[in-house]
Image (cartoon, rainbow, N blue to C red):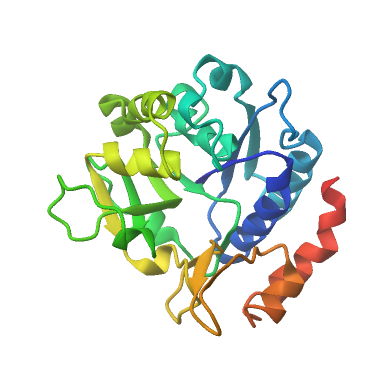
Length: 274
């Protein structure tokens, strides 16, 4: 199973938790690819080699054939930055997945995950589905589906959340999807730019069931839980953001104890990241 992450040093805790959840819920070989970069004048530091080495050691401890490759995308990013969106709330590190078509290390089939993801059950069936000529597979954005729509589509709802995406790299290279998205991000300012551009430009996409990217609250059939910012209506309308590595708030705010064993393991290991 090939897994793609992107991020700077702030993604290290999330990637550790996601990796622990993968190790718990799959017996397949795992091959992780972590894309990062270093930019002059940037306030963030790249995903560290030390953190990558430590997470790799956990993978190999489970299966000697498991791998993790840390890939520096600095040169690619500087060559084609998302110029129109650099001043937005957008985190440029999220864009690094859009260079996957230019990285020979990335295999033909790879599952992209945001760093605030927990794998709850075995996702082998989702990962190994027949992709045919699909460019990617994703799940509807829980809130965005109501506000954004590609009017060329016959679907009532077709706006996908980009936190869990199964990429068919040969098809993406053939249609030049990522090249088109990178160009769009250079010339057009957008809300949630990379997600918006992927939704706008992807021609062959498959909508998967909600259980493969649950963005609101845990349900009995949830396979992948995504700790996104969401809306709450009681006791008053407000946004709510709780990330898996904020264990105390996972308990006190979300009242969620489903992952206590996993998060306890994370707390015992997190100091070894740095």
